[in-house]
Structure formats: C-alpha cells, structure tokens
Image (cartoon, rainbow, N blue to C red; front, side, top):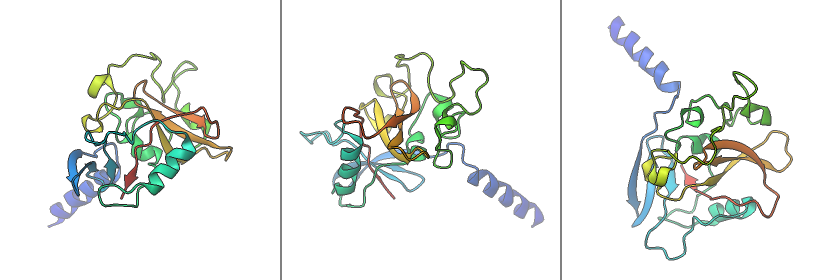
Length: 197
C-alpha cells in the first residue's frame, strides 16, 4: 500500500508540473468544426464551408469584440486566448512551446520576460533568430499543431503587458516568436483564434 501511495504521489506531482502535455483532436460540435484540448479548452476552427472566413486578421479591439460576440457551434461564451493557451498550440520550436525557454506567461507578463534566461546578449529565447524560415511541422511549414489548419501567422493573446500602456503579447506561428505589441495602433492586425472552457 505504501508503494502505491508513493507512486500515486509522484504521478500527481508530475501531472501538475505542466511541460506541454495537452493533446488535441479536431471534432464537430453542433455540426461545426472545433479543436478540443485534453485541458478542457475548446478552440474555434475554421469552417471550410464558410464563405466569409472568421479567421481574417483584425485589430486587437476588433478581435476582442469578435470573440466576445461569437455565436458558434452552439456556444456564446467565446473569448480571446491567453498567451499560455496559445503556447500550447506551438509545435516544432521548443523555446516557445509550453514549458520552453521563453518565460512569457500570464504570471510573467513584463517586456523583460522576453529576454529572461538569455545565455548571451544575442540569445533570443522568445523568438527564432532565423526570421522568415517556415520549417515547422504544421501545415505549410507553420510552427503549430496540425489541427490548427493552414491559417499561419500572428495571433492575438488577451495577456496584457504589465506596464498597462495598451500593449499585449502576440504569438507568431510563422516566424515563430512571442512578442509585445502596441494594441491601440489601428494598422496592427493579427488573427483571433477564439477559445472557451
């Protein structure tokens, strides 16, 4: 009995430590395509039968409004994902995958978090130094899980920069990188991949 309790305790410790273990499946919910994670998060998935793609790039304000007002797959409680949630969709670039070297998260939401843990001044834990190289395992070389589909590029997160000056973190699945961006600039566009719990 003691051996069983010890093994169970160890497995609970490892399960709670994170480190990437979210698995995904592409499914249908009320006839609409969605992506479901083992963490209980449901993601909006592009409907190939929809003539007007809802994954068009938007300003940050429009992205927040779009998710908040989205009525899709029988649900109306959609929202913009956090940077932690977006990082679970990264594949093929360990530094910005969930649990990777990039320290940006809901708990570390300062601009300095993008350089925390640098090995030297040229080290970039939150971005690929070889920009423009799309060699990820996802569709069309995207650094994302297969279920995310072919819409590659920059995605808004709801995670604000702690300075409170209209900045949020953005995740680029094409480059790949996690970066702070000014969200009150009308010309700044990215995709909105809405989520719900």
